[in-house]
Image (cartoon, rainbow, N blue to C red; front, side, top):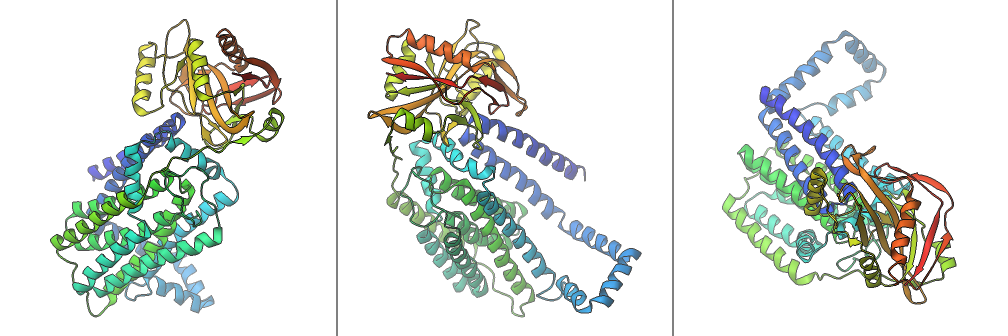
Amino acid sequence: MVKTILKIILAIAVVYVSVEMFRYFSYWGLALNILILLVALVIVLWEIILSFLLQHKAKIITLARAIIERIKSNKKWQAFNHKIKIKWPRLYQFFINRIRADRPTGWYLTLGIIISAVFFFLFLGIIQDIWFKDPLYFADRRIISLLHATTSEKLDYFFVFFTNLANWQTIVVGLTLAAAYLFITKNKKAAQYLIATTAGGFLLSYIAKIIFHRPRPIAANLIASPTSYSLPSGHALISVCFYGFIAYLLFKKLKNKFSKISILILFLLLALLIGLSRTYLGVHYPSDVLAGWYLGFAILALGVTFAEIKNKFSAKKPAPLPEKKLLLSAFTVLFLIFSIVSFGKIKIIQPANAFAETTLTDFSKTASLYSEDLFGQKMEPISFIVIGEKQQIINLFTAAGWSRAEEPNLKNFLKLSSAIAKNINYPTAPMTPSFYQSKINDLGFEKSTELNTARQRHHTRYWETNYKINNTEVWVATASFDQGVELGPIIQLPVHKINPNIDAEREFIMTDLEKTGLIGSFQKIGLVGEIKGTNAAGDSFTTDGQAYLIYL
């Protein structure tokens, strides 16, 4: 009992810490580390939950029966029960039959439908978020941008491998092999339910895409974008249906508790990585993946329910699954096929930035004039519009004595945390990412103050836009001064606090840049007027809404 209580306390602590760290990592844009955190959270929580359920299965059933008997013996319940029985006898009998354990259409079917309905309503919740443009809708493209900030060739092929595991060709091969083994070992019913569950996933995925008609993410894909619609993710849905039913069959076959838990956790991790691969590769929005998972689990719940009912109430019990060695051999072959197809068929591509020629007047009317947080809420307005090439901007700040900020990965984040704790300088420290038109900042520059500490710095973020003026790229930038470190008003962890007067930082930067002699011309222009606002950390700022237009 003490161990159980300790595990529950541990689970609560893990959830609390994970939520806080998820918010903190999201704020810092540590996308890959968010994934690692998510995977670790899944492993820990499911290990605790499954261990508890398997270890105390008999006690839980006994407790549930005791609670039901206690309710049935209550006089108020008995009076209510009698009233319903007399007033609506057919309805009463219908519900009684739904909770009977001695018939196929009783408790087993009811529980399966309830579980399926829960996941289906979660799926509908995603549809509602997209339809009414709730925060998830606005975070979709920005999450893809965050993930792309940590792309590498190894990660690209890592996620290509997992995305290939749910390609329809791979699933068909896997389904054929799995069904063949089940038929050979006289487990015909299991094969039929596996085929039905997987086919149901394919069918509902196709129908849902036609109904919701959502376009794929634009210019974000690292592989060739499929021609079908985006919502829901077919890969996420099918991975749950096919691999989930395989995991169910193995769970029923295995006797060891640890093996049972391991199979379920491996299935969840596989489904998780397949879904995440679709967002990382830029062919699905995160909400598409969530919708695919939810709809997949709704289908899987029904498939498992009907399989369990058939096993329990069938007069002829099905033959056992193949021995472990045979099953392992089959899936080893399947894995090799997946590997060959994964690296031989799918090619990595680099998203191209499409530019549109414009004028300054049209740019100020059509382009966004604000930076954004993860959910698309406006933050600081633009302080600089720079007409020039990327290397020119880098050379400009280098000449002005500024340093280019390093990428906000976990290694650099820990290095910055150490520098802040020791109160020492880190002149190329990473910055918290910010967004402009759903895109993460392309460049960041900073300059240390006379205090020579990572706790205080001048800094600016730059984005390449999709516009050109006189065939030259248009860049936009914000500016702010980190005056110290404190617990954030939104994120209750140490973050830099900005000086509310962001105009002073704009002028400081312009003075430094002008001294380099690398600016062709510049002028101050009005953009948004006087405003007040807050940044992603909850810090307030005020500005006159003006910006410098710079030609390099």
